[in-house]
Image (tube, rainbow, N blue to C red; front, side):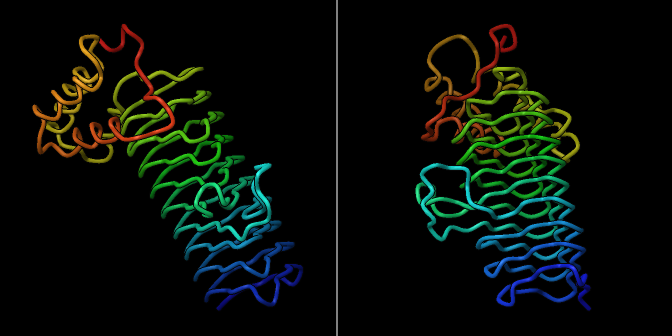
Length: 266
């Protein structure tokens, strides 16, 4: 059975799933769809063409689905799609897509957005990702599954962050971050692999060993990056985590790959 506080303002055209709970002074727009069991605490605003997946919990003063902060946005009917079982804490802001970015911002399942995090237009965020307090994403950012963006970090528009990557707190990330990588600093540099995350996720000792060997080869000072990627592809053919890094690094992107400092690459 749904619970809706009498002070909540819900447009008649909004779609509400079963068992939703909507607290005091929430505002739900006409093109919003809330899945089963969604919880909105007090003073949450959900606007625009926004879908919120079942089991998601949104805390006070979050602003979800309002117009993008993009001067090129011209009122096009873009979408914000939020998956299931996410936690969206106080003062989080999430914007829909734009015509220049595919018309959709997409959030996966099981993510955590801590206080004050911002997801800009056209971002694509994988399952189980975490944005720590006041982490900020520019437009068109892509984040892979299980990635963590540290508190007070800023990610430049169009940056890609691979699966299981870790961005340290207060980092300024302007280049792509390889899967399983760990970066920090202003401007952020690659500091190695996210070994703690790999162990927590249950990666085998063999996979971690192969990743460490491949990392040293990919970021060695000898030869070109493309030559080193070709060597690693041959040496580690069939090792899925390593090949994921190779494919990510070799893919087309508008941003460069975040590199280690010379002493870290040795």
